[in-house]
Length: 284
Image (cartoon, rainbow, N blue to C red; front, side):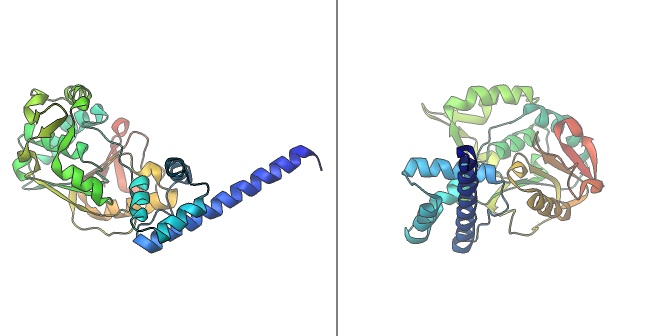
């Protein structure tokens, strides 16, 4: 047989082996911890696995599973690796500008406003929303529910402490999002961190919630889940969209990330495109 065919066969076998190993690792994590990554996009999961193998000098995925099973605490290392923690304050500022100008007017007359930030990571966008609602004079009747599957990042979110080095970027985002004050009014600093005003946390409730395995826990006027669903398979995306639909009140708003859409989901007919450019949808 031609050498190139042997090469193709070897590559196919390697890919099959890798696929089996990943499946076994994700199954093992689920059985050991209850956290279910089996319907996450394999490309994303594989990048995280590769990074951990490189950091810990582990030769195979199977060896990674062995450490998760036998080494106390190692499962938590993998859970931290697999959770999605990329965020920033007023991320995609045009989204927040549109929310301020177009969504907020529909919320003003409500006796209470309930907002769910699903997959909030370290909380930067949650604090952004608290600032926005304060500036719009609505914070007194707003409850923001900030959830994530990862308890470690939730603890960071609760503290409201962010690197001082990021404040220049965050200030720019804030201004582009329609901010009406000096952004520095919202925090104090030392030489390393920015400490956001504790009053911003008065109407924020942080707690653990897993979009993959947990159920609806309230009825919301707004659900924000940005740049999380892109890591899920189509099957899991539909499952989460069903959860969001059940959790939104009639006429409620759903905000997604700029690479996400309701268009191809099974629930697409259940929403109107309130602001398609900014991925803001309204429950019909």
